[in-house]
Length: 543
Ligand SMILES: Nc1ncnc2c1ncn2[C@@H]1O[C@H](COP(=O)(O)OP(=O)(O)OP(=O)(O)O)[C@@H](O)[C@H]1O
Ligand SMILES: [Mg+2]
Image 1 (cartoon, rainbow, N blue to C red):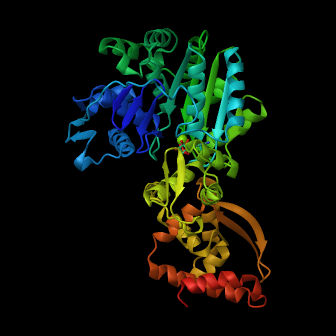
Image 2 (tube, rainbow, N blue to C red; image 1 turned 45 degrees about the vertical axis):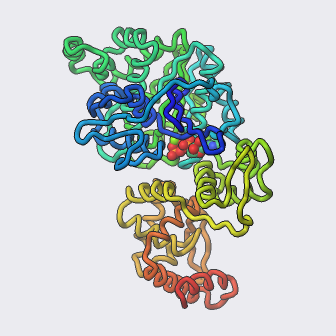
Image 3 (cartoon, rainbow, N blue to C red; image 1 turned 180 degrees about the horizontal axis):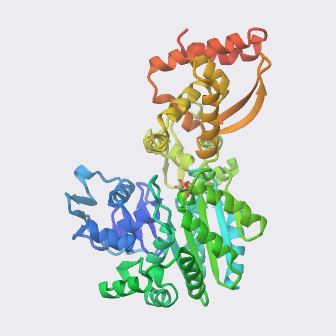
C-alpha cells in the first residue's frame, strides 16, 4: 500500500483510491495496464524510469509498440488529474522516461477495500451475475474447468464486475492464482496469443513466480521462450534453438498442459479482458481450453464488448461463443443496463446519512439509460457545475431537478470522439446525418433528403450496426408511399449528442430543413402523424 495524497494505491487489490473533499475515499478506475504502469513508477518513486525498463517491467518481454507506454502513462496521469506541463505526480523526462515526483509514504489506516461495500465504487445490480460467477468458481475449484464470457455494451460494467469478483475470491480464499491478460486495441496485425502472453508474464512476475517458470520450462518451453524477461540470454538462445520450427498446434498443446499443471492444486482464475480486440490464435486457444476434457481447477473469465465484428479476427470469436454455448462448454453473462432501483441504491450507498433527493435517481437513470459509465459521468457533471454536491454523507441539490440540463462531460466526449475517429470518413458522415434525423432514423429518408445513393447508405448503417456499438437496428416499417424501410436507432443518446455537436450550426440547419422537407413531402396526405417531428426540424432550421 502506498500513499501520495490525496491518493492511495492498493497494490494487493490493485485499486487506486482518492480522498475526496468530504473525507470519503473514492475509487478511481484504471485499466490493469495503466495500473501496472502507475504501480511501477510509484514503487520507484524519485528515480528516473527509462522507457525500456517500463516496457520490460509491465509487458514482461511481450512485443508492444513504444506508444503503448505513452498511452498508459497518459491514462495514469489522467486518473491522477495530472498535467504533463505542470506535473505534480508523473514527470516526463524528454526522450528518456518518467519519474514519479510526489512524496510517497505508507498508510496509517487499514485497507478499507477488503472491508467491502459502502465506498465509491460499490457495485449495484450485479448480485445475480456475481452469484453465477461464484457458482462457476465452486465448480472450477472442484476440478471442472469453467469458461465464462461476460458481454455487454461499452461502460456497462464488465471490468467492474470482474474486478469485484476477483476481489471477493481473493478475500475469501488465501490460496488462489489470478492471471490477467489484456487484448491490445489496434488495427494492424495483432501479436499472436498477445493476451495470454500478457497473463503469463504477470503470473511469472507474481509471488509464485518460481513455480510458474518451472512449470513453463518443463511443459511449455515454446511459451517460456516468448517471455524473455524471465530468462538469461544464454538460456533463451538455447531454448529458441530447441523449439525451432515449433508449430501452432504444439503451442496450443503445451499451454493447455501447462495451465492444467498450474491449476492442478491451486485454483487459477484467468481473466482475459476486451476480447473484441482478440487475435485469432487466442480464439483458438480459448476453443482448445474449453474442449479439453482433463480436470483442471481453472476458471477462464473473458470480457467482450459485443458485438464482435463479423470480419477477422473477431469473426472467429463470433462463431466460437455460440458453438461453445450449444455444446455447454461455456457460459455467457450478458450485462444489461442498471434499473432505476439500482441507481437509487448506488446513490444511497454514497449518502449513508440520508436518502438521495426525490426524483434524482429517476433523472440520472433516464439520462444514463442505465449505463453505469454514463451514470457516473452524469454525477460528475452535476458535481462540477455545483448542481449537486455531497457532504457529510448526504446529497445536496442546489437547483430544482427540472432545471438540470445535461451536457456531455468532456472526458466522455473525448472517449466517444476517439471511438468515432476509428470509423471511416463515410461512416462518420453517415452517423452525423443520422444524428440530425433523430434518436431513431430511416436511412431512406436521410438518403433522399441529403441526395445520397440510397442502397450505399443503407448498407453503411447495416454494417455500422453489426460492427460498432453506436447505432442498432430497431425494426422495419412501412412508409406512407408504400415503401418498406429499416429503422435504426442510436444505442445511447450521448452518441447522438456528440455527433450532432461536432457539425457546424450552418450544416445542421441546412440538413434539418432538408429532412423536414422530405418528411413533409412523404407525409403530405397524413401530416398530423409527423407534426411534432416537422416542428422540431423546421425550428432547428430556423425556418
Ligand atoms: N454495477 C455497477 N455499479 C456501480 N458502478 C459501476 C457498475 N458497473 C460499472 N460501474 C462503474 O462504471 C464505470 C464503467 O465500468 P467498466 O469500466 O467496468 O465498464 P466496461 O463494460 O468494462 O467498459 P468497456 O467496454 O469500455 O471496457 C466504472 O467507473 C465502474 O466502476
Ligand atoms: Mg472494460
